[in-house]
Image (cartoon, rainbow, N blue to C red; front, side, top):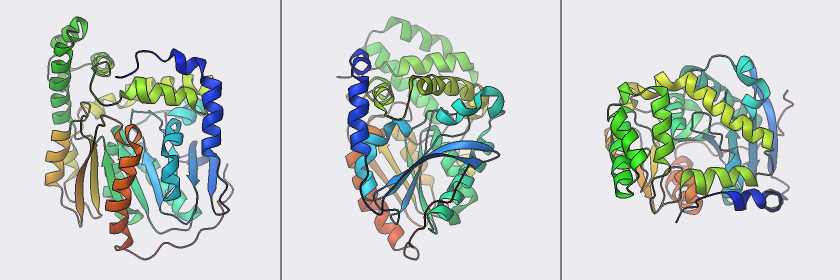
Length: 358
């Protein structure tokens, strides 16, 4: 059963922050734990680099939202840091990056701009950690960005891993139907009324209607953890590196970024990017995801042409599958992705200290 309020998390904030700070403490002599701003695309953007051995493969997470920074989830991925160097990047318009610049300093945002920024982040990491390639993990709206990064610069990446895979308009249609059915089962009159008013055609939804629809979607009860009440809000309140000001900036950035990206997002069609990828391609999807449904992700995957491809379900996980079920997701990375990248290129080289950045 999902939580119905986060008052206990608010009351326990200081205790949980201290607990997570202990969890995140790294003592390995070869480890790395860096939180800093890096000049990307002409502005300073915030990144976190964490791992027990900087020689491990780099895993760059491309967060969704738009502008839903995943750095709040670092404690949930602590076990991953034994095997990978985990990089969280607050994109232009998101999280700490938005907090530093605000609306005026952020300027216009497009998916093309975010893709260019992401490629710069990847190049920075490869140079800083003295590696040839990294693993790209795109989640939800981040999969829209990640797929285009993989398309443009496949030589930078060992593999693309999509989760909460965004396919585009066909996914919106199926998500609408699944959630309307869920609202009807729950006899949620207000939610049903809204869904019936806006109708099933995503191309006719206004930004306001899309936003209101999403607010009702996260209230639909499924057996899997609720992405807002069980994951985002508790993780946000318990993060030792996020102040209340950071939390406010988080939501301001989401509002601003959705305003900037909505037209592109609602018309996105993953197949129009082309279905041929020049690198190993994986999709690991939550088996009860009603936001980016399994059926559309799997149908899209079947059309993908790549040197190697695999699809797997994450059990008892909805949207944000890698945070809802971090251990099963890690097993997929270790047993499906790592064997492929270890046989597809030269061995990983040693690393040097990260150079000074502004």
